[in-house]
Image (cartoon, rainbow, N blue to C red; front, side, top):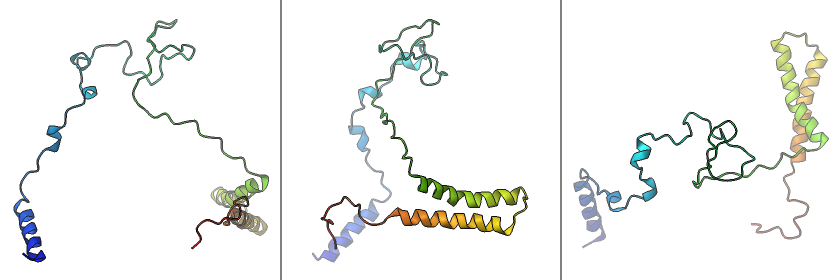
Amino acid sequence: MTPQSDEDEVWRQIVASFNETAEDASAEQPWPDRENVTEETDAGEDDGVSGDAAPGDGIRDDDETGDETGDETGEMRASAPADDHYIPPVPPPLPHGDTLSRLSWLALFGGPAYLLLAALLQWPMDGWIVFAAVAAFIAGFVILVVRMGDGPPADSGWDDGAVV
């Protein structure tokens, strides 16, 4: 047989089995026990916590036990679910930046914002006001681009890594 005849035979088999249904591979896999729902839960058994409550309602911060207890008002304390949910860490605070960067951002957005506000409110705009707003926008943009720095950090040492 030639390689071409093997390919032809494979294509004939693919075309012949085009309308056949595929085997159900999931029928052989067992259903996980944690996915099973008990009859009591389906019947809507009341566990003391209403389904309309927002997450965290009725939880007291001073109670460090994990059990369900009633507080002074008689409300039930909802215990935290034991599911494997990811709780992200608190993000670090944003950097404050130096004064020049802050002024550059202010000029970049402040110039066009002033012109837009003045046009919408029909304030009289003299030529020097328009020039100052446009100059502030351009100066803020240029300062931010120049300070961006596209070179390697100053503390990177003598090794430049793989330079091609």
